[in-house]
Length: 337
Image (cartoon, rainbow, N blue to C red):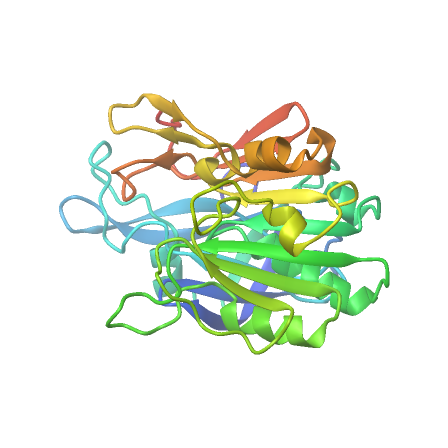
């Protein structure tokens, strides 16, 4: 066992749910009562496992691999759910190291129901959604990219269990497409069916789906399920739109967590030549178009968008709360920019 992991928690995989063709939700149970820990909405764990991964020669080499994931289940429940998306294809070789450095595809292949894994929990108090977990913010407009709804799932379960009449959530959920492709009609939106079921069940939950690259959307049969195309804060004519005001309401009370890539949050991206480009993201639109104050925004950034090189970009979690910047190692020994 690697140094620092001797006292890590031990949890067992008890189930696996298919979310999309490249995404699964793993359900874990503590192996004993002593392995259980208390957490809050918005926190994350790091899981570690020995995985056999490819080298450039085609051989498999076993090594200890760690990844951090937001907890996707409510702290009111006994089991922990982690939603894991394949960040790199099975067999992808990093040209710099000559070895595979992906995690998810190998985890999917090698970790089975009944297997045990190690978990580290970070108990830091100023985590993502800390104000929501503390009961300070209850009127929530959550902005999510395609890979950012894990903490929203945790929050929805928490709202379902606690039944706090003051809590209200609108999930603004942006994805490129509803389906994998025009010919492959498998849904490619994480939690899609579950979210619609919960919106119909919970009167204090609304879901606003937008598909940025689709020309058509499904028709909604429920007032709390909304489908649209294009980007948030841009109306069909291309003019600025007050998306928060339109679908959620009072901008003065709304608390705005944003979860996803750097480009979604603040418009920052890396060009193929390594230079950093800067545009605008949800944070700027909320402040400039809606007039939201910065203290009403929370952010969790999962990776730096790399234009034209998505297969080999480093993946890491950058968690920003206020003026603090915490960078948690995920993919490479260097951040690559």
